Length: 98
Picture 1: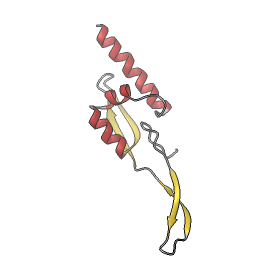
Picture 2 (picture 1 turned 90 degrees about the vertical axis):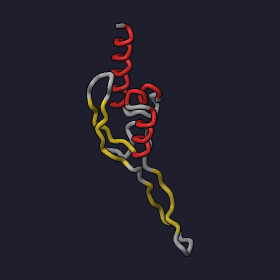
Picture 3 (picture 1 turned 180 degrees about the vertical axis):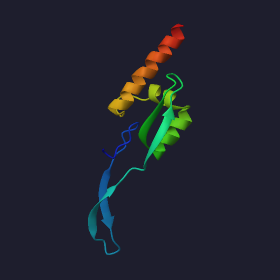
Picture 4 (picture 1 turned 60 degrees about the vertical axis):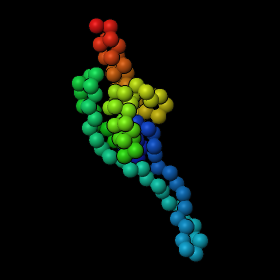
């Protein structure tokens, strides 16, 4: 399992550890990933995702998983999140037509 956020695409970055003597050694900056269960209001299902803490705050700020996925582009989303997004768009379209 890769260390990337399923909603934002945030992943591992590389850089340098710099000591007081200015010695440089390579290191990794890992994202703060959390395994969370998010509920979709449109489909009525809960989805278990591996999400960064920053993305979790963004989901709450935008008003839930449905609003976040509809507003976000497909470029950063994982393949699983893209499927969830399609389901949500389909269900909201059905509810709007009814």
